[in-house]
Length: 596
Ligand code: SF4
Image 1: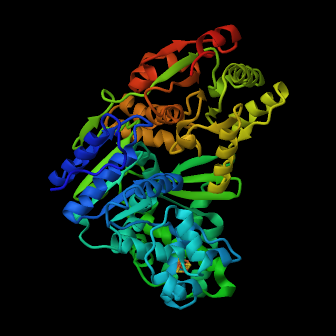
Image 2: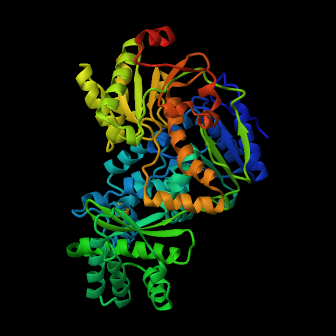
Image 3: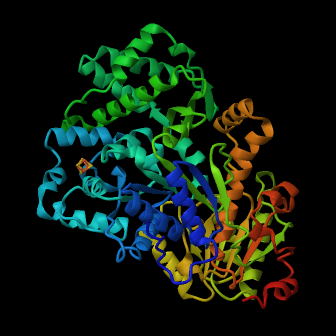
């Protein structure tokens, strides 16, 4: 058996050990959790193991990541291996990124409808991008270094990028993709369909602490009142009386809406009768949807959305862990069905071996072996906690935003080099930004919720080019995870507050459910405290890249001083932790003025 290949001459302490652990775990058919700090180089270790598994065992590997930027990073790192291996690596695009036809539609085709939309258009030969997949360019093998490169190549040659990425994946030993393809059951089946012998494959999940929350989001379905009504009319016009009857029962549910209530829970018991279940079974059983009619597109899309909702309703109706909510949104009321606990065993049992990688796991899984590199590799970091400010909802005021802004101005004056300030929400970000504009005539870079990948790149370029660059971002947003700020040149990360989730009926139902199978403390920690702290640790981790260059992390909020929160912090973040009052510029100068 050959030795592990590593693309760098001097691997960091622990990197080769992690790669070897993953290979051993694959050999045993086991499950492994690897906890390693930011900047450790988890991707190189995981890819080293992935190439080894693909070469020595002839097995395939799925490398799952949270965001497209993270996928790009894996593809770029894979380039370092390509001279030494004849292993094919490709990226699997999501349909929402890779469907060109829907961009030509006048009506908006929602993401969850795309599989049906695609099926009807390809079956009826009405997708020109599908037809062009027989061109020489679409049949050629290419190894791309980013998702955008796959998209652009396909767009340029006018064939479907999604189908092309599926074709490349079918021919590859290592497939890089976002979590959506793993955690959404339907997409997971599509991914599996591109290849055989899945049970011999290795699944690597990077930044795996995101799995519980993403799984919850991906395994919920909604339907608006407007869509339910349109589906009812469409079903009647097609004499599909079972569908019309189910749609009419859904419309009936909207009548339960109480004035002034933003969300309420509905019992699924009303659906628990044989006649309804029979109709639901007929409506939700797989069948080829009607071919698209250009004049009825809007109604057909609503009908598809209804079918999708029914499929999920049929799955949920008898389950203890599913809930139905009536939510009042700005654009009208919605019905939502959610599963309270995602069964990770579905993924676990599909592969020979499963590896979770994270800097901040916070997940307890009994049948996983765990491995931490904290003792071998801990990055240099100076952590300062300013407990004099709070972003707690009840204490938010103009005065508090001004206090935070004044401290940011002080930090900017003392420290040279790019700084990112992370906020608990876009709302707090904008309020502090307004106060900052009153204070200092500096142009701040600001994260916007709807930013695309190209705009994010522009922001990073601008931030890193100017030695006094300052970016205002959101913890858990686009710049807090998977962004290495041009190979670790960020000087300081300021985190203002603990990004706890907004209280809601849904959240309280999830808490109650998890408490009923564990206990209240564990439910609170797993659903609220640990995810919030993960966002803080990920944001702080943007400044740590190696053991020599010291990053500065400033945590503003008194709760960071609480014993339980300190216990949950990783070692590197709390090993050099001091209290500070950032309004005191002399103290700031003394502590961080000379750090390099
Ligand atoms: S083949 Fe591609 S472009 Fe055509 S409908 Fe399907 S996903 Fe969209």
